[in-house]
Image (cartoon, rainbow, N blue to C red; front, side, top):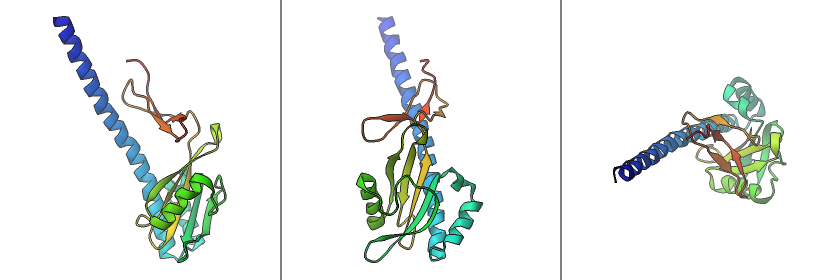
Length: 186
């Protein structure tokens, strides 16, 4: 009886610890995404303040180390008719902008029309894999839309401070790419 009771208490404690550790890791991932959003907002604010001047966007991107993580950065402007025009581009996006097709194009168009921040999707495979995101109003003012790509090769891991936790980013097709990893020893 005592053995069974102590086993249940230990199992409940392990579960509580795991839930707590997962919350800490979720906060860390959320902070990373927030940093990307903040940087996209800064780029968009410069675009809005300068009328989309590519030279001003390049100066910001060249002077802000947070932009260095982007393998591609594009600033587009939405016309009153809803069409997107490419104003500035750094790096080479994985697909033509603003004529992005498929589901990724729909996500870009939705942000351009309705605003918000969205994960556009994954491009490439293996070492050439990228995560694409886009931001529009209210994060990016003045009808501007910022598009970024961040390298996220398959197998990319960020160390977890919590032993026994493993996380993955799912790309919507049932495949996953490890994002956070920890030793399996629990």
